[in-house]
Length: 507
Image (cartoon, rainbow, N blue to C red):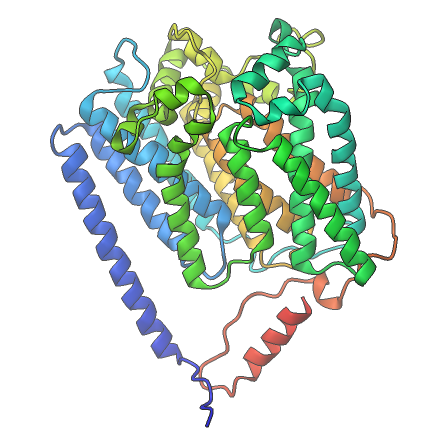
């Protein structure tokens, strides 16, 4: 005899939630205590204590983002990156007085660097906590994703790849090392006179277009936007082309780590709607482990020198893979000597596609400028978003920018409550997947790819309604609004839950 399914009462759910919260608090407190004993207690410093506070804030926010009512990938990727890259790593570096790049010590800027990071984190936290709206945005015909739009975007990506691949070294070099690809690009004359606009058009734009095409294909599958068998086969062929293009442009052999793993993460977020709490917890833990372990291990794909110099375990946190704290210190020193730049690097990054021959005053990426001011021979370095914001707009600018950044992240995460085949969901997926590159910086090096992907995404979906070939199903009434995930009230007969399941099935 089959027993009816037991629906937990509100009291049972609250008791279970309190138990999970108590366990998480115990684990977090234990971890912070051990981390403080290992990193701060042996050599107590103000910078170390502030860094420990940053880790505590990051872990608390990561837990709350993980167990919130809906899946929040933008917030989760932000907090996971923060905890590992500029949370734990600097504590080890400060304790041992061992920074990734050998230069004259700037110990007097350590506290300032940690204060800037702490206030950026707190500003993001306040902006991200404040509710923007209860449901995702409504979908209009222009912002609805269809198979026809996906075919057009993927077709453009294929055409651009066919045209641009021979001009950037050919197909074979894409499956060699990153150094071989850079040498082929240099031999083609695309890096002359420090003007990378042609490189962006011939290499970065096709890669971004291919990544967007794959995300659109997978969202079409998840949203079941195809009308019939013909639409299904059309989408299958389009998805196959998008997969091949991304294997060419975003494989870890020749693509940088943030692009390669960003495409994988975007594909996962596009194809899977993570609703169960277990899967959300697994995603957050996976992000932490990926940034702490897989990220430095990815140097195996870079070149022979990186493979020889590969360091594992805690030794990896003293390498240039985790130079965010040192570059923040360097940015403070650069600003104290040369002054703030008041948006010059930001504007130059946004308009990267303008050739330097037309815009002679266009700034180089801020990370290069900061490294050059410190006398580094290798200047293509990271510069965290908060450090670049400080360099541009001073301390007040950090607080203002990160408050509104938190608001943006909250809005994007709430957009996921809508149907998957929409511009808002696609934008959130792409931004969440490639946000780590923006946070690592500098923007002048990351915006050409991330910005191009987001612009192509908006144009590909919203710029026109698209041709109608009869391969997409017509929109249902439920797509015109968002359905928030509501649990059935305690003591009801389950009718509310049945209506919710029916609505989700239609969606």
